[in-house]
Image (spheres, rainbow, N blue to C red):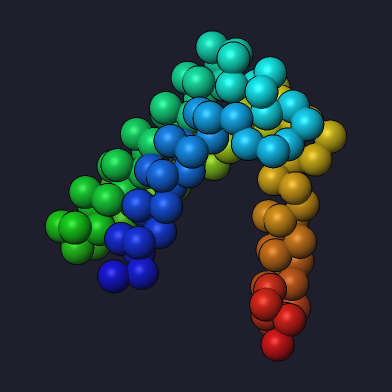
Length: 107
């Protein structure tokens, strides 16, 4: 259930970022064809994960392939549009905390 919800969130994230938000560069970014392509690709990756989750797939290779595509998509987007702060530091920070057994939620 949690995996399926997370997969839907990826689909929705790709859809939401195709529209400008409140960030200082949002209006310019959404006009970029490459931004739109990467956002649409993000939703497609999420749709693949939704299918795997719905099927309750235990196909590790399929899950890894989806995960690898997700990481590549995120890194490519941040490389092009926000190279100075990849993932807002979230991935790097949570990975370090997790390796030390510290919750990302502060408890």
